[in-house]
Length: 252
Image (cartoon, rainbow, N blue to C red):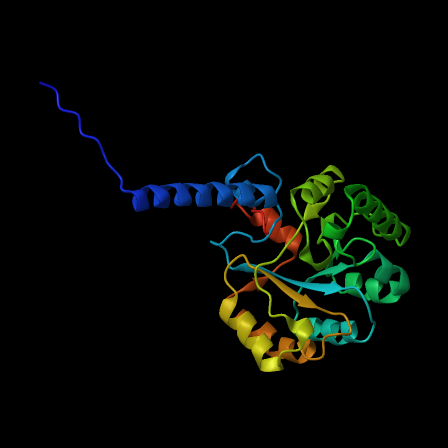
């Protein structure tokens, strides 16, 4: 004689199962809508956010969208400690400060862009983003910088569609994974502590060279030799990309 066992759930358990199922379904749909699930797919476009964790190379990056004073202090510190960095600048800023841009490139630092106007791409229609990138490219070409293909969207705001557009236009979207929030001027020591304690192999460090930063230059005087003493080697973002064997990943 065959025996069949039936799993009987009381009313409370049945509702628990229904609620949990609905929750996980909603969570999966939400992740998919913002593009986070793209990290699991090799077919999805990706922003570069970290290099090879098996190598001691790191990339120091600076954003500039306004001002002309603090950039000089930061370039002075980089020269003093013989460190190469990557500067992401807006096209609008580049137009206004071509001499500082020339000083950056003469110092053998790499150049990337923040689009033309420093405005969030998530607040724009995709066609507007395309026009902004085209305008930025025209500006850099006119200034003599025709090989600028690294893009950091303003404020680090982007989604899958923006990355796809950027790649169609031969840009590589670059994010970061160490951020001391130096533009908020939290204190020189706090900036130092964040960078020194969080930086690991392959990391991309975000800092700023706009005039809003008041403590970054002084912090670099400790950070640059400090990271070298820990065995890290500073390279450009392009070098980090070329050396990376790990998958680049989408960042929300």
